[in-house]
Length: 298
Length: 270
View (spheres, rainbow over the protein chains, first blue to last red):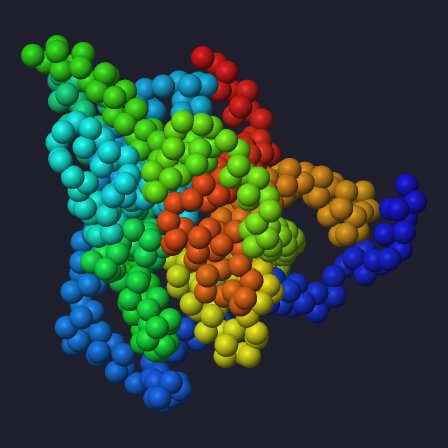
């Protein structure tokens, strides 16, 4: 083991005990990249939201004009609320789909449960753009959904209800985000002690009563954190509305993007993003605080 | 009445689960299946299966270039994030660490915030410090994005190691470097490989941040994004099928490395 001897010779300082400088050097090394490439950009970003633009050039004089504009201009606030509502609807839909699946998972044991869980999680890791494309191929004017509806005779010409509008955004986001809702609900369902359900049955409750009055209330922390999770992912998304939203499917994310692209008003775009970040933080807090409050028995 | 409900409930549960699976996997099947057929006037011609789309794809230079860029970015981001993630995890567990909670907060920030915010922040930053947008900026963007995951995975493994291992190593006269190389590294290696594979998979699919910090380069998702605006063509479907296959494989590999052996063995109790 000559390598060992060499190493020992190369680093005598370690044997002698770390010098007083070492902790500081280690701290510097650990902090350097996160500070420079995460915190600095985020701080600069926040700073930008207080600047303004004059003839395409950024004016570095602090002003709250961007925020005032957001709250007073008749364009932005309605789109902001509409996007919030849309994402809330996505969150509710995702929970409606995810809850039965999560509940079904808890009834399984061993290998079956593991397999189903993996199958539910695999789509999470698949390319996001591709999933949007895939859903769009079903929703489109020529898509499967229209073909199926035509074939059943429910409609007589391709419906444009699911193409390039908010409905399409709603459906696509729901399909993409269901797996994110399954996991938190499953974890909170699993945490409910079986004894509580047995006790409920012993006291004469039917299965349905036990489900509605014991299981569902006790799973609320997981269900709410699933909702906040889905909401945050949906409201931060730009790719889905851009790809399936069309003209009428304009969302907050697209406005932000347009400020950096076509409008070329970076400070205003930054201010809108700061508002987005604030909404995200509130949503995460809400989801998290319920979970902490009624974390329940572990 | 309740009897009936009790009997119907499991069936309903299974039906709902099936619906969700159709929703999750059904859409993905469409491009994969239609990649083996040609498209005439916006409709798939089901009469004859063909692999012509795959052949065309292999000759498509812009796609091959994008693939190359994606691989370079992925490898760059993996190397940077594993080195950084390991270093920061080691620092986090060292007794002299300062401001742990703050450090973790910064690392998790890009993972918690919507990617559009991370991407825009980096875009403004690069412009402000006069850093030309290039392959390097994409790698930095991806590293920042996957770092939280890599760091967390390695830290979890590090914390599950008994501290007596390290103490024993010091007692036997090993230097810090020797302890790291001969004791910690072998114990961390599977977590590091798993984290690396997962980071690569994430980087391989990352679109939003790349879209904002890229210069003239386009990665595969960006290329796909651009192609998809034109509509549905067999070669997009073929590319979609290949990317899906590749990411799924990556994830299975990552799961193999990260899943504790006991969990897999324990799942056999059936």
